[in-house]
Image 1 (cartoon, rainbow, N blue to C red):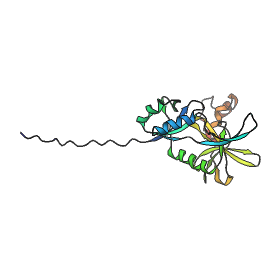
Image 2: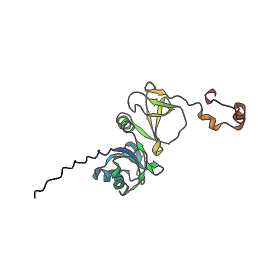
Image 3: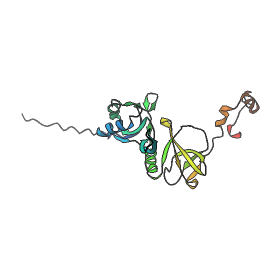
Image 4: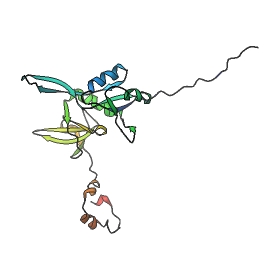
Amino acid sequence: MTAHASCCPEISYPPEVCTWYALHVCSRHERVVAAYLTFNIIEVFCPTYKALRLWKNGCRRELDLPLFPGYLFIRITPHERLKVLRSPGVVGIVGAGGHPSPLSDSEIASLKSGLLKCAAEPYPYFTTGDRIRVRNGAFAGLEGILLRRKKDFRVVLSVNVIARSIAVELDLCDLEPLPVRRWLPVLQITKKPFKRLGILRGTSWNPTTL
């Protein structure tokens, strides 16, 4: 008898997609974790900024410090998550409801290109103020909050998934205001205005009339 090789079609699996995530790490372990993950062939983005520090002997020294203390960004496939979570110094991948929250490629790309052109520094995270969008130049496409510092205008850009912000100096011509959602302040309206609008009486109400 002659044996015949069975002709089975080869199964092709779609390539896994790499996605950016924010990684929460132990305090002051950003560089160590980044080096460890890079050694294990994980793409890492750990932005830094330059800051002057005064030592006890009176000397000043310029240091490279993490722009987002306690966080860095990784680009991984789903099967690499466990390897990352087992890495020393890692607290976890930032997410909600037990699922990691992905970051868009465009957001990371804008952050990278902008930091090459503009100096940035950490800034307290907050969510109030005049919201704007950067339309030209560095950080184009990112949204933030407009501030004024002496004679210059600064923009606070926030990465909401990690609740961290940075402040950068940009020209006003590169900014555009974002439309205000007029229905948002209604959450803070007291009982008396609600009565005036007829909400408590069960009548129809259009939030755009505010």
